Length: 567
Image 1 (cartoon, helix red, strand yellow):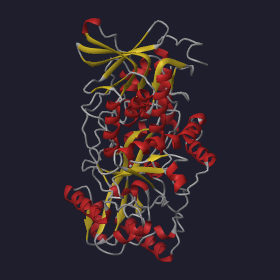
Image 2 (spheres, rainbow, N blue to C red; image 1 turned 90 degrees about the vertical axis):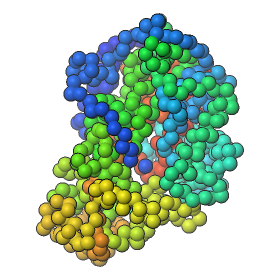
Image 3 (cartoon, rainbow, N blue to C red; image 1 turned 180 degrees about the horizontal axis):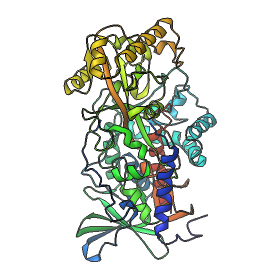
Image 4 (cartoon, helix red, strand yellow; image 1 turned 30 degrees about the vertical axis):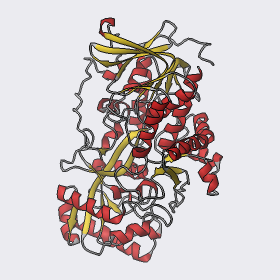
């Protein structure tokens, strides 16, 4: 149905509660986590909602902003909200399509974050002779989400991501950068795909830890391209409220600060790209409570759900079960607290398949699982945490483990060097000084510092050493070359839980990136991309598709800009 065939229904209380409460109930009943550290502190949420009811405050639409507080009005064809990767790509794409475009961002600069972008059938893949089975990829993504997804959107990414990547790579090349592809795939029971593209400084300069690959490179290029195309960018301009006309069409957004607001009119469409709600404690608690078992977060502090909240207030629907992307790298802080304000650290080698035990000193899982699966297994353990344990030959072990994408430490031949083992060693020493990591000269000293049952833990270590020497994991089935003994001092232990990255579910959208109402009809004039949008992932993040989260964001943001410009 086109947006002209059926007007959007008016806003009702039922609209908000139906979608959000269903999501919370679904997660509480069985929703699992998904899953490459920030320590920003946020205020603890109160036990009751700020609206004085038992309902979450984000479900209560605010009163209309008085006209007396709106001091300025600006008009464009397309208004994009949020200047992260998705928002910048949407703005550039709308402007390229000939639309007068305004971009508003609540921060004082664009948001940088993710590094890898997944695509299928890019010119780089063709050049390297890499063919991805499109139907297999679609089936695997849908299977990972239990088909609680819209396969038409997964099809769309598979069919259009290569086209996007070619456009993107040409922008990067013009700016003096190059894009490489992760072709060295992880071995084991979970199939990996050569889809991860990443921007680097040519010619194949070292990929380090701070700022010299991925979004720190490409975000400024996108910002400059937007300005070159005449996009009007307004920083320090938080969006607070969408406005609709009598037919239900979203016509404008009000942004700014109290008593000094600006109304941004959109003749064709408004695109929500505000980064999702991974930094909104109340929304996490209500929509995805299992995410509270994370000890650290690297989600940008500005990702507080602004776009999703504004869409709910005009009648949007959200995915029925909400999920987060998490990695198994969350160092539990000295206070032992999980959840907000996420004071733990981010352990880069937390995804290495070293021995893991629960607080009883028992091994409980095949440690060679995708990041999010390890987190799910850990949630099932007492206290929702686990210990990762390794010994003094860890550099040799990690080299043999051969992990890839963002857990990679040792590069493969022909690829740019990474930070490497020396950097990891410095990182470990810093965590030891901070009291977030245990180091001991003997197993007896280690177990005493860990505080787990001594006899059980020592028996677990003895059994694990036995399996490693035999070269066969009779207990949990880990591939032989990822087994490692615990015999050489010093010995290390890290108390871990999940590290929170972003929500992977959000507003319901169609294949034109239009936001849908509770009847799954388009809300005229409203689009969403990035982590504000949903319908693509469910339950867990398909980690073996390196860069799929950003690949979906980028591909769909470009389409959102083009569709909004053509309205």
